[in-house]
Image (cartoon, rainbow, N blue to C red; front, side, top):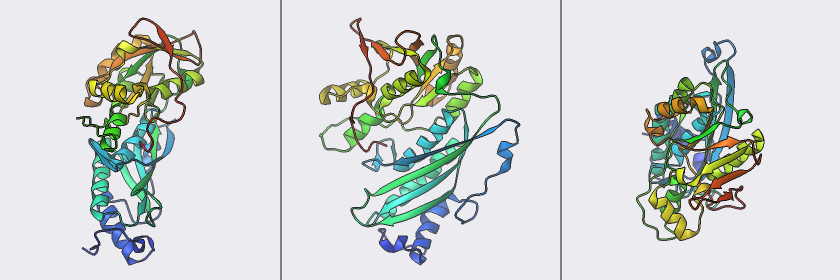
Length: 340
């Protein structure tokens, strides 16, 4: 083993032997990319089907703390990029990963993050095929930042996009909401909160494939990350030109998440999720979509929370537990920074 350093130094980003040792032993040995060049040559067979299209997405990930109950920034990076491809109807295939590493970061921490990324990529059926590393001085970053780019293929005839949502479509989520945001808040330790919450961070590619096989008429899907389901629903309402109505009694939340929000004066509809999607399905396919989702662990808690309507286009409203109605607007400012 050539890499004996316990912490990253500026030499590991200098282009010499120290950098080569870091890349070889911490990254390449785990990811096993095809070759050690600055680009990946992707197999053309993925586009062999007539009418298939490429899908491309890119994400930058920052979170404090870097490791948290249920995951770490490495798992977040893989799952987040896979999910952005999957909710657009693509089958995720390849990822690139770029690391910004602060001087002084423990090499053991890097190894744990990389191991998590490799494990998540295998489970999601994708390969990490190329990447980059940069080392910056102390104080110039917050431990580790990761940027991932994902490439997938959309099969011929598959159209999943926000603009397709129509009045009458049913709104489905695949499980309890707000776990990631509340978990990160508790994990930071600033507020002396003690909970058993675990992040919902998960790759949803297999779940989307199951849903699309059972309910090919799926209109749109989005992963509810920063801004929570409130942000996603408002964006969809605006683009599709429909109103959206959700039922507070149907929104699935853990008691611990409700408690954290009540203590801190937060609205759980705006809490981040990293393994939750919001799905719009024609009413006649909603039952099939729910049944398919519930066959997988990531969709075991799938429920209907509302529907798209012709009234109040561009606006999201919620029927409250008290029988009234309130507007669910876009978040102004931020509830919780450095979340994903």
